[in-house]
Figure (spheres, rainbow, N blue to C red):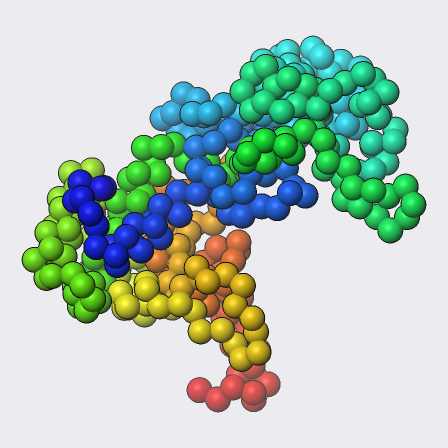
Length: 328
Ligand SMILES: [Zn+2]
């Protein structure tokens, strides 16, 4: 989407915001996941869920940057047929599977260092090792943090959560649809033209985006409406509260509660919203499932999904009405 060279500043802000949606959520050094990387990176698949969830998204033959299957020490060491079980699933330790230590008791009982194993550091086969470890520190004397494998290179971490995965095509199409949804805000031209952008330039960009999105069948109004992304008038809405979104909110920083420090200056009033939540067994970072919504509404929905959240809100309201705390 960068055919227009030298994007004006405000459109750059928008572009950055959209590019960020193609990345995974943040992760710190203590976990095995990579921190904010593209969603088409190597995926981590838990061995326990292998039979149910290991297929790539429908219509795709493989993960663009491969996968690593993670086996718990218990599953590995307590199963005398593990090698043949792995072979039956086309898995092999050090090739596309690793033992993943998270519990200190497992580390002591099945210590990989006494087995002469080495920690893995490669995300593509061969993985250059047979295990990875992330054991949290405890207060006891022997309770130091254990962190082996994928902890030196940049970015750290072995891969991404399976359900955060999206192919590069899907990431691009999602970005295009999200930009179209920005332009479908009732006042989109108003906000971008307030600053340094001329109306002609803004209109050109908007129309270019609509044409591109249309050519990829990303502007089906019925589907957008069904997904709560737009209202009957065709204007972009917050998927939870269904209020029309103002494009100004895309550029406004979140007003923090009094007394709270602002840690993340990149948080704006409007955030990426997943209509169906991300979870194992589904790939929900896809077109017609992503929209923009209020930061506060997003915080309420979190990982529960909109339907579950509405049910909960309904119960909360009913309880409050029944008890006379909320008058309608
Ligand atoms: Zn809202």
